[in-house]
Image (cartoon, rainbow, N blue to C red; front, side, top):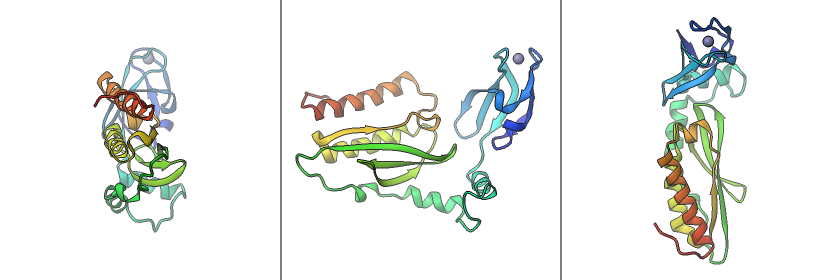
Length: 196
Ligand SMILES: [Zn+2]
């Protein structure tokens, strides 16, 4: 059976393997498929259940936020908001480089799963935000390279939260790319020779 993301925690699940029966909030997340949804695992015998959970569309998420009173019913539909967010030209909001100054950036994720944004801060001050999507660490690296090109040895750090959206299924080659970037800015900041 297929469950909706906003309802499944209160739905009844039963395991054909061991007979466990309980609420969706107690099942474990199984394999995840980018924008579609995820499989579920029995919390008792840890075998795959026949039930899957479908992620909400942006419109579902929007409707749910209105139903919960978290945003006003007049808020523009997600398609408009997202189109707006995607066009962020973030280089324009970056302050100019000043020699001798150090720059600590942080990326934070906010919002509901699959209706989330990531925000970039400089020394705790909000700079810009974009739509967060599955495995957006690629975008993080892209932004990171722009920051490195602009601030060079003054770039102290660019931290991130390893959320489900950010990291996704995280393969070892993905971790390697993030580690490599981290090492590059660390070495440059500390005056060590670094390699591309
Ligand atoms: Zn079971």
